Image (cartoon, rainbow, N blue to C red):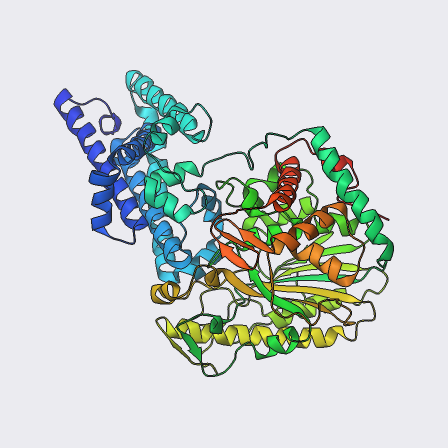
Length: 615
């Protein structure tokens, strides 16, 4: 046994053959990752590796070789280190292919934190593939752990070689992990030929390879420091908008209405898309409400996913567009490092509101339990602590109807105003097996079954929303609702996506509802908005006292009603880049400076009343 474990005690010719074998193994694994990235096109893979981007392919292979040698050194065995490496790369490539297929977006390093979300992963990829992956991973980890245990039998000389290899590869991998540092040599080597495309991660991975794109999305500062950032600049900005709001707040009300945020999973209208026709309107109940109140389209950052990012924007009023592109998920990458972050939660908590978050799923997704604590929510009601847990037919998720009942129970407390943030799950993918029958039938260019079942899902969601707003009329305290869909579902074929412009694939439905029907824009039904504008728009529509921060956003919204990376709407036109006049640029720069101050700067603005209600 001891002889078998000696990983370097080989004849020179055998050792050379092993190294050649490892190099070939790494090259093949890198080709496999490219294959998964490029929609299983061998033609694109070989052109990338041996014609278009050979230098970047070699650099990526070098990083993979370090990882392989690290595993071999840790295990004390070339064979078992290579075995676990093969399993890891195999699963990573498959996960990337799945994400590209469903969301047109590659795997990011931060996505690896989702590996423990077994329930959601099983539902997304199917029970059989999920169990197979779990089995293979378990076998690989078992034999790898067994190898580490038996490596203690290696001779002293072999242990020195093994430990040296382990330390060297570990240190090199740590250095690689700082890829985005200014003087990183690997980054400089990539920069010789790489064309980074920050606004499109899909194209970024396509141009620099899977490994290049993956490395590019390693840890980085949330935002780059603006040239004119200083305590004086921040004080000037906060003073300017605080003084403005003191004048306008004189005409606003000091009432404390209940405020309900409802982020409806994948809620959108299939009829908005060219290539999809339906036999009846699945959103009939939704539009019965929308046509009586302030409503329209919301610009979503993502297609098919990215729920937590839309939620982040809605609660904080900070924009994902302003972040460095590597800041892909603030909930897991940014907020856990912060002790506090200004948001509508902290604002209302300062006004004696009770703040409750409801998510009919587990508490670990996107670290919501910890994130909600940082936001300042008083409680987090999840699937385990909900009173109402009914589901629709074969749908594995708690229904919207049950979730709304949970909200209504909270509103029975008439002594304190309530802020409730609900993130629904009923309409989460997959769709095909939820409902044995459906009232809705589509004529669509691909994936008809999923689209039909999805329409049944949003029809149930619309029905539940209509009943919820009806029930709210019996609530004595004025109650305001912001309802929106976070993104489109990832069910549409490439043909449908090709027949619709990119903006349309990022537009969902939204409305603002007042149970006392006092919204100033209740006759507007074609509004266009980004989710970070929700809170200031609601306050303005409801004639509630604003903050200096919301005043800044309100003025910015009038100039640039909606924007995300690659999607900018101003002067009633869409563009892929942002071109601004002086007024617009000044507002945008003020907003960017404030956001930098909070997420990456010195928090100067927190020492002012900028984020607080101004009397």
